Image (tube, rainbow, N blue to C red; front, side, top):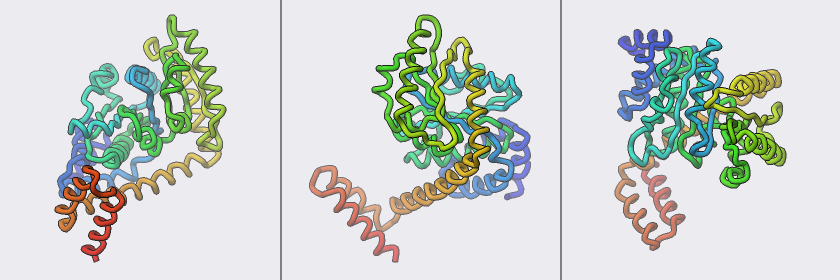
Length: 328
């Protein structure tokens, strides 16, 4: 650890939010020297991380994720917890920036001294977003946040990616069961450890009860992703802050069941191993794209493929053969 980073390390361990934000910015930097400093910092923080409960939350647009996260975040803080919220949005790469609305969407939680909210990092590839989110998670845990919530903002691969880095994956659903079941991918349902029907209030409460029953039937037909846990289907009104306590009780039951069976630790170890291999893949792809002998070939072959003059398999083989030849 470089000497001038030591005070910052202490500030992070003390939960200084400015120091935490500065450390995350360092990790998100693309400069080579920043990468080395960031890795040294992570090595120093690693012994202090890993004790938090990691919760992934996803749901279709309009399901009320922000309202729900703020409601459960404030509920947990009242119980004495410290809560970090990280957003994952692979689509932010299209604009070259990050989703900056998170703090305004969860204004009360963002201002609380025992909460920390971080928008999604922008990155050229999905793996880059995943790496930075995992590293940010370690910083938050070392800083004393004992509940880390990872919210998926984008759609598509992000659900699988988030599920691979959390302990519990929570799927928020709307009361209109029939319509929504058609829009939810089977794979996303299979990932869920907990399904919560939000907006169970007012005129929609009857609909929410029906939806709860429908989701229960749908989940019954799918294999559970955990041996020691059967996914639960609950209802809540994040707006009225009703049902949040039952959701937290279910989360605690989940953790107890998996810890007693040994599945908790097994899952954590498996996730760490997969993280290592995802870093290897990311590094290989980056080196491949930046290889001086391939930089002229790549745009030419891309053009040939896009115009329909060459099969993608042929172009890929040419690039790989060239890379192997130049690398030996």
